[in-house]
Structures are given as structure tokens and as C-alpha cells.
Image (cartoon, rainbow, N blue to C red):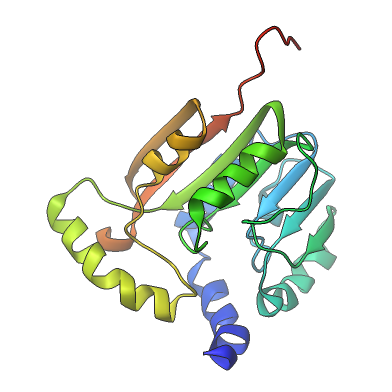
Length: 211
């Protein structure tokens, strides 16, 4: 699977993650991003055109050298300076309280230890910092859930560890006390892979701390 994951899968991911439906989600979720920014699962850089003009520099992490190679063209064309690090989101070297915003789009589905990754996201956010996300996951319909559970083992093999049956609301709310989230089926995407969770989770400030 090494050759597939490093040479073939990055191109398949880049192709499958483009299009007007996903572009709309990217634009919406990134609209309020500000300050010091970390993007988890940078991939091929598909989010870069949708960051607001006020964002001029971001730190990004992704463990795959294959997708980072494909991202170079987008990085060069972007006014944003990208400090890319080939790291997993489960073990971030950044200090506690480093970032105002953390971004994750269509990434949490593929991280093996998602609970640890969310704990790391929470840790590196400043008090009052926000986690911006859009992810696909578990449908509320039992019939769709059955197929998601059946197909996830195959999906993990062919799509770089992607799970289509994770309850993203539950997982994020386990880590963050303050979560604003909308969920529903995306247009033009089969229901089994198209139930999207989009929102913002805020890291609460310690008692007695004010802006």
C-alpha cells in the first residue's frame, strides 16, 4: 500500500475533493478564520483560495509527503505564507495556547486516533480560540448507518484511512464545551458519504480570565 498511498492516492484525493459543492463548504467554514492559524490535514492545499484576505500566514500539518508535493503549485500561487510541517495531528509540537484558529476540513475522518487529535487541537488553541471544521460522518438514518458501517473497512483501505461512520458531533462535543454545529446531507453526494458536520467549537476561557 506504500506506493498507492504516496503516489496514487494523493491524485485521487485531489480530484475527489474539488467541485462546487465542496468549494461552498470550504468558503463558508473559513470565512471567520483570523489571527494565528493552524490547519490540520493540509493535504493538497485546496483550502488556500478560500481563506479571508486578513489571513496572511498559516502553519499546516499533514503526515503525507505525496499530498504536500501536489500542494506546491497552490502554495506558490497563494499570497499566504505556508509554514508546512510533515506531522500527524495526533502529536503536535506546538506549545499550549499558540493559535487563535485551528482549521480542519475533511480530515478528522482519516486520523487513526481522532480523540487524541481533538485533544491536541484543544490544547494548542488560546483561551477563547476557535476550531473551524467541516467533516463527513455518521448519518442519523439507521439504514444509511448500516451501509456506512459495512463500507467503512473498504473505505479505509482505498481512501487513506477514511471512516464514513464517525459521529463527529459526539466526538467534538466530548472535547469542547461550546460547539455551534449544523449537520445535513450535502448536495450531489451519495448519502452514505455525504452527511456533513460543519461548525465552530470554542475553547472556553479559564474562570476569572477576561479578554
